[in-house]
Length: 520
Image (cartoon, rainbow, N blue to C red; front, side, top):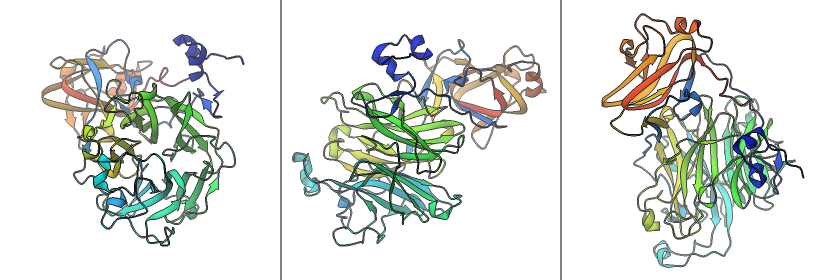
């Protein structure tokens, strides 16, 4: 077979097997395309734009000095965990011996009700071993395992109930919170404005009987239609993870993000659909770096023209390391859905582990693994399942909640403290006078903003007004941003110097020079 290298491959000096990872439309042994490189649609034109600090496409080249990216603050709720494996609740729920990864889908509807759909084991060989004896008992690797889909709900997102739904029979009774049996990695999408009310809730899952992906629909989010298998392009192997789905605002297509296999490693792949029934062939979109950096599962959502991925990264390389067989929750982002970036190169962990990982079952509930829902339950809430104990060993899981400002996922800070950081923004063409700089300035810190080569736009003539949204409204006394950029072909160049401050991004009424921002 002749291999045609992409321009990107040649520029990087990649050849042979490595080139397969970047050449477009190369089919893998699993029947999906490896690293598709087709161009993606751009977002719609907006009068108000917002760019984030982690987006390297915003910075002017060869100007940045003493700056690095740092993950923002995530605050865990004091009520964590909000619910746990049903086997350990009072009274015990026999149908819920082990939530395991959980793959939570937490949705806030227009009535203020929180819905949580999660994968669980309904039968597991660990359930016969009392909790107190597990630390000194060898973990059973053989025995019957059955999976399913369960449901919980809440009025405030803090206090949860697992209602008796009367839908699924388990061991002679329907008094349980089960929605389906023998399905795994279920993703749920809620579309309140769906024209067909019977399809407001959409579900995609893997059937355990034949390992095929299938879909179902519901009006109330509880009573789903019979599962319908994909008519074509179904998986040959894989998708045993969170099958995360959302609707892309750019194409109006449904986007499924799942996990397949290549070179004996877990890789992230996507499929698209116009009707939620017929799906495209899978395209690989993300591959980690060896056994110690495998993306086990990733939920995807979009905000301010950026696609965000909450990736559970699996460590499977060295059995002697304390973090072997654990999952860290990391943040990825993309402008086009096909090429993904680590938000922070040096430490990309979004939600830190709870304390006591070395104690295994004695650690905090989220001390070893974390799997997150997309942000579909409020603008500042990340719901996630956390576990203590290793992935393939004794393990206990609960639902957690962490709070984060979506505009402050990642900030730019000084690489060497005590010294100012300096950077520039790519040219901006203003059609209005609004410019907001998203920043936090510590006591004794400062933020100096100027426009290169423009008289009257020096830093000492730039008052900043803190806004209720947390951003600083920036202006220059007696000057117009629109007039300043009118005579500039590409726009004006903003320069920023900061001390003891964090830069989160910028927004306003402008268009940025994006000639090199989008893939041609």
